Length: 145
Image 1 (cartoon, rainbow, N blue to C red):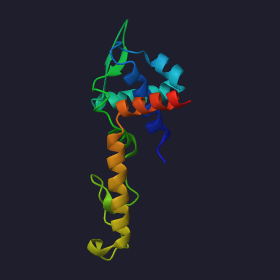
Image 2: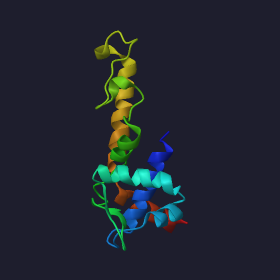
Image 3: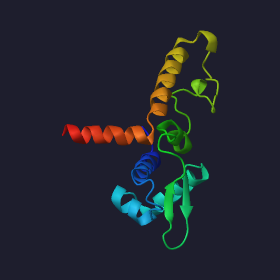
Image 4: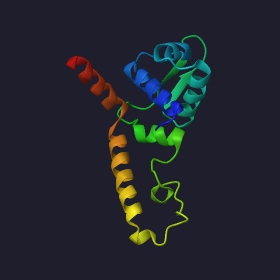
């Protein structure tokens, strides 16, 4: 399961992607519309800003806005930013690799091989899930109702 922080980050990013081109959006509006506690959201938005996904403007007419195009922001990047590796085992992670203590031989470990395949497919799907893709899917689902 993803953390609440990651879920809130995704919700805020989708909200900002839908409003791209409208200028900065104040934190309180994002928090109200997306039902995210304001203090928690402030921390999330700062992390997204440090990661180069968002930018902000201070003062009157200020707030947060997407720095990147919605096609360039995917769920894999957001999940890694807040939750770390996308893998069930430390021996199959990309940036956070650790050898499993009980493993006799990684090269011939069938368990590792299965989880490596799961991780690869999961990351592939999450990378394809850009903010634009999420918005497109949402629109399609609304039309089906």
